[in-house]
Length: 430
Image (cartoon, rainbow, N blue to C red):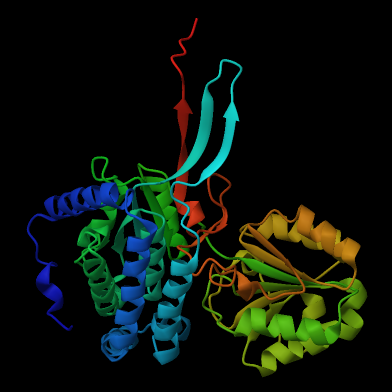
């Protein structure tokens, strides 16, 4: 489990190694595209079983990663994203079980029609091919991505962050065991076996046609680099600058519960709220309780003048704060002049990831849900539900904030494309 980390770091020809990995993944992808649902499900069941059986080894490997990260000065939020415990390991296995139970999208005919000349045309779902996932710190992404790609008939090349190197190897061992038991090629789920950062640049080239799509899962700098340099399509979100807007018609008790959960449940995840907006008409009764609650819970609040007056402990907000993804126990707070002002603020400073409204006014809620241009918009619910597992997808590779092919949680269905099958009886075109 804890083999020397230098095993591949000292490889003399990294380009050849990466090209070989991509070629193996391509061969595996051709086999996976034809694999039966039963065979894929058998592999997923064996993977979940192996993760549960290896929980102690996975947590031990993770402890080494966490110790190293702390020694390197990692923040508390980073350590939280990196850390695994019994509950999180079980959550990984349970997520694989859910993916196993999802309907197999491969081969599903989504539409059929017949042309006047008698030709019958079908639109049928097919895998994307080889997916490369580049992620940072959160080792559970490896299990999520491996399971989702397998169920959707795709091979996947995974490049985890150097901070989670040991954890990823331990989890990957379990996934490979599941593939082996089901008789599927081990290259179906490939972990890049090196910490060398040059491996990322090589993946971005597409490895001479070996990679069909890239999914970056990490901080703003990683995603920006991938979008700037990738020579193949990218499913990406830049960051989660998420808002909770508390309307004048909001229940204070509900608002307090939602705001506290949205910010403080796990401040480091991409679905965490980063900005609190409070309707001016509700500020007299709701602003101080919300701000005081957050500060008492250990959250730093940076606010405008109105928010600062609500609690002397509030720090002044700068222009930069409105567009910052803190990934920490910090939140920006502002008083806005109703739902239209809230929507305008979100449009200006948000990242089109996840935004929520708390209100008992259905018309105001409908306006917010219709006009906020984000991948996920919620009414009377926490932004922390921005998660493929919570959507019933079992897991997710990421939250896509673009508008092409996939948007929101990227699950099994979003990892497929389609082709047209045309059935004729000898037709020729005049």
